[in-house]
Image (cartoon, rainbow, N blue to C red):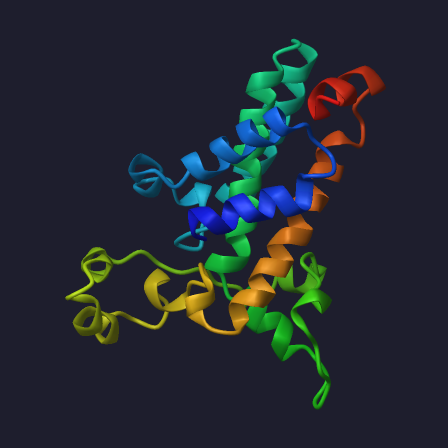
Length: 207
């Protein structure tokens, strides 16, 4: 998702939980995952190239880093690890076909709005049909505005460029991805803090 979208989700999903300085650190670590070095050779940061197991493992690794940093009283490192965790969790919905699978499961004639989406439907999280966008070398040329109209038709349907729901410009399904990622961010906060002693919880939220 675009940097502005990640920032917005952090603010909306976690703004009631953290202090301003904590949110700023979490948000900075979140969007740092989209730097150039984070885009190359790090499919696990973004659920790209069908790297589901690697990405899930990365999320759990960052969760462990968050809690272990808190036990060392290193709250700055805890915020950074949690920020990285949230980025990966949010990208799952923008970079995979989860939204398509969820919509296809809805009863015929049913009207389901974006806030209705279940971000952790167990059947869909492990569905055989679940896929994420593949990064093809040719896709790099699609970032050049003049070349994009020529390159896009040449890219396979399973390419990241054609599958992603990274911004509202991608159409109405973006709203479903946004709402799913928003809910997932809150779930990750609850999962990360549920076993924390009260003193470490207070340290984490910085309030």
